[in-house]
Amino acid sequence: MRRNIYYHSRLVKWEKDKKMDFSTLAKHAPSNPKKPLTLKEALSSVADFRIDRRKKYPLYEILMIAVCAMIDGAKGPTDFGRFGTAKIGFLRKFIPLSNGIPSHDTFRRVLGKLDTKRFNAALVKWIESVADITGDVISIDGKLLRRAFTKDGKMPCIVSAYSNRTKLVVGQIKADEKSNEITAIPDLLDLLYIKGAIVSIDAAGCQKKIIRKIFRREGEYIVSLKGNQTKMHDEIRMFMQDTAFKRKFKKATTVDKGHGRIETRTCWQTDDIDWFEDKAKWAGLKSVCMVTSEVYDMKKKTTSRETRYFISSLPVDPARALKAIRAHWGVEAMHWILDMDFDEDRSRARTEDIAENLAMLRHVVLNVLRLDKSIFGGISVKRKELVWDDDKLLKLMIAA
Image 1 (cartoon, rainbow, N blue to C red):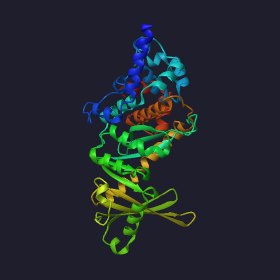
Image 2: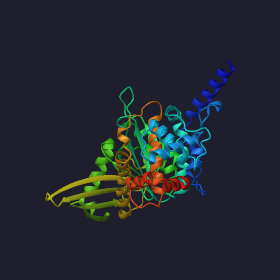
Image 3: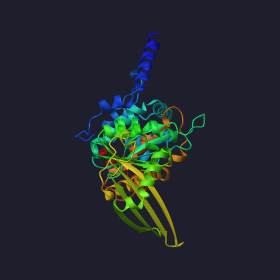
Image 4: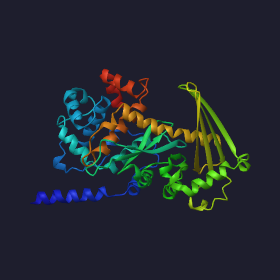
């Protein structure tokens, strides 16, 4: 009876801790820590939800095995267990494994129950300690896990923050669906150290609450405008397209040629926004931009045109603004890698929090591979070499 009461009290405490919001967690996170953390140190700091008598396998060992297995091509808990059994001798070169290899059921149970908020916070600390994102463009965007839908048919959406200079995922959070990015982004911003960085978000993030959060955390922003802010979009569109005013705007142009296309992008930017009635409601707003993209298809001899509008806290510098806008493509390219190299869209993991925790592990692996400079090539090339050469994989895991 005492044992049951003890277990229940620990479980209640853990469930209470899980409800802790991201702003509370952020208070315990270091502000751009100077001492680099190793991956082992970061994973060792993740809070373990299990009671002491049930911790046969240390949590960091379970997570380190999962990371190593995923580098070698594993997809989920069953693969992690099989990889560990097959490579136990290799794994013991950098992990004690005093009690051997956990079963696939243990991997599934732990990844399903692991507190996603604390796991995420630990990984954010790790990335902040090894990479400086000050002044970088941080692109935020969501990606649906298409086969991880719940019983009610909803597909979870992982909202990720991506550093374009370092090419690292610096944070993530789960939203119930793509439409719920609006509520997820402020929680993600609470975890990130964005002072001096430029936060780039698509039209879904054009919300006063999100803009205010970026401003209060001393970040800059450049955010796309679309139909979700119809009045604002139409007012800025009419103003920016007025030729009488357009001649006064500063502009910058880039021309790129490749893949049988010639793309010309022009950005007009102005800080003449006193006419905008709701200016005071958008924290830190300093300028608005219009970007035209003209793509000439050399094979089809056709030209397509697109015009987009943005609000920004940046002072007028159209070349800088255009560079930040184009950098948003980086997070979409990262999503493509997750699908092509990690087969993310075909993952069917859906019980409890396992889908989000597996997504986090894929981001960890992607970051480990990005940080490694010993192997030249893309993500798929690096993974192949590490599968073929255990010595290189060992060096990578020790150095991570």
